Image (cartoon, rainbow, N blue to C red; front, side, top):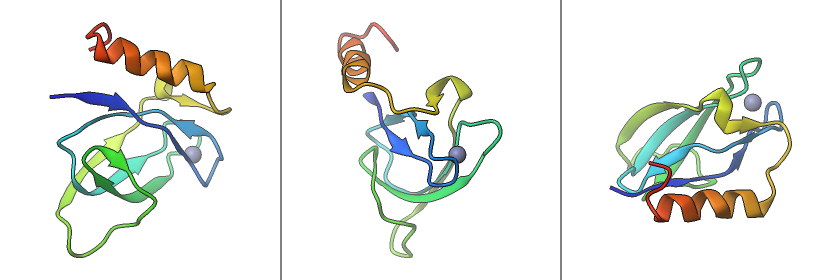
Length: 96
Ligand SMILES: [Zn+2]
């Protein structure tokens, strides 16, 4: 089961979350911001492990609540290269 790092911005604290999601995830998920001072709940629709801009919809199944770890949160956006490196490490099975 492949897992990939995804990037999405918290609208509440404007920080960046980098949760690792499985490609099998499909449906309405609640993602909790990894900023310990924020913990904002995002109601997002996830399609094949990708966080979409859509909010929950009634047609989809209800998924789990995802708690983003504080270590997967940064206040400033990570450089694209950093995320690419993470993905490459994952693809090589180095970071599972
Ligand atoms: Zn936040």
